Image 1 (cartoon, rainbow, N blue to C red):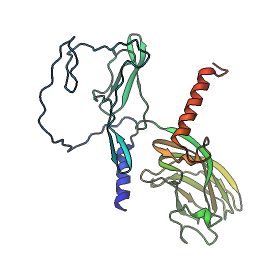
Image 2: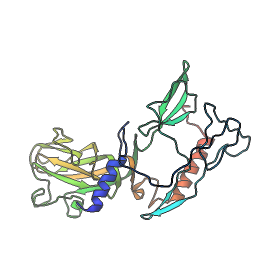
Image 3: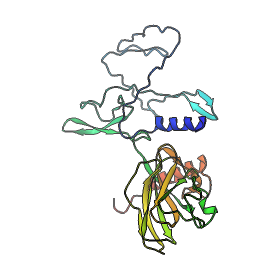
Length: 309
């Protein structure tokens, strides 16, 4: 594995979180000049910019009757690194506790010690109704694409995405050999994918048997995605996880058969789908096209409502 591949794997492991996972960074040290003690501002005193302020147990309230936002925070500092423009944050929530207290008022927002955002959506019987804010770290979404063919072992071109194609895994006509597993590269379509929806077809089957689709790198499993008879052409829909360390899936057949595999949607969290395959784009999606689409949907939602509402 190359150094760049090592970095990609490390990044994937760092970014992907399933549910609530406690995480910490050890050995991090910030070296700098000594920091003076915080400036104390008693309730009623002005906030001292550029200093640490303490209001004790009092709540600071900002009220405005302007048409614009009551509070606007901006940090225009941009750092260019590895071809990316990295923005400095304009707001930081200090992680604290495991859960927002039950006497928190509706609209309260906090971050727990595990990096999850929590919001109080309302109250019931005098207690806060605390919800988690969905982020790419603790949730995912299904992204449909224009259906794409990943492999078709009946032709040499259709076998290009098989990363371990050889005379061991495939016979002279390209069929997946009995008892062999092939690994399929999905990086043309998705980056850091979690799962994939698709359709598998078997044809020119040598004998009664089965095939299964499963996440790349997973351990032994005893399931079938599709069962077939000899000399049969048959299809079945499937959903499979994607490999943790790479955007690959695997296909096993216990009897020799041609394999055709199409994909129709991906499940992603921190990742992304290649915008060229999104159904609302005839080509690569641009930021302007996305903004226009968002604006059109917002305008339509404001003017109309569904028949069932």
